[in-house]
Length: 283
Image (cartoon, rainbow, N blue to C red):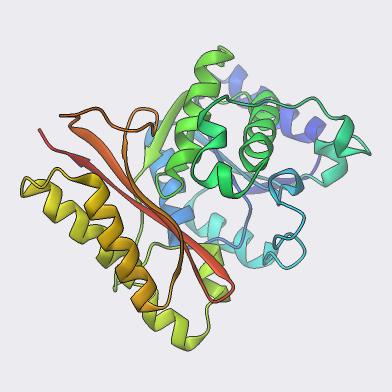
């Protein structure tokens, strides 16, 4: 596996693959890789001849009081894992390669509506930062296909819409959530949990799984299900940001009889904000 840090090196390598007729897959990450990230690489290898992975901790998607400075960085470990998994190229740009000296002056890409609800309401500007950096990386890599984890479902939907609206000739593929043996969705931020919190964290998935069971059994009172689940989160020691049942296509409020749904949750456990979701088809 080759590693490059400049856009010139990146494009030179990809141009050679293009000349050989290779199909390019792209997996953008912020590093501190776990099995969830590596499953994206596995899926990318099934979709293309060459797999490019980027590691860039994007300052634009962090708020003023969030964990940008503390976000874990493990470049040597990440590189070794990617090589073992068969990635072809690792792109490690510096902030100066992605943004001009003042981020306040950068051109931004923002997807309306989806960027302002749920996690977007709790983290103003977060999705603007995500879609801006992904658009820039798409222009740098120019892949045929890009892969994203379904754990960040709102992010995935925003990126799909951005890709369509801006006419990027890129197929966007969502890869199912990878979970620990106790059900906790894998996340780089799980490392922030202390031992006691880690033992409680799987309750998040258990609680939304119970909503799924009730929906599948015919319960249609979404507000009641959400209120019951929020109370269970509180009793387990979480500070609930939101727990909600939404229409899958755009995460809007579902119409009566809607069958394609997503159950989404964001909650704090100690100082760690955890998110999870379950997609359900009532047909």
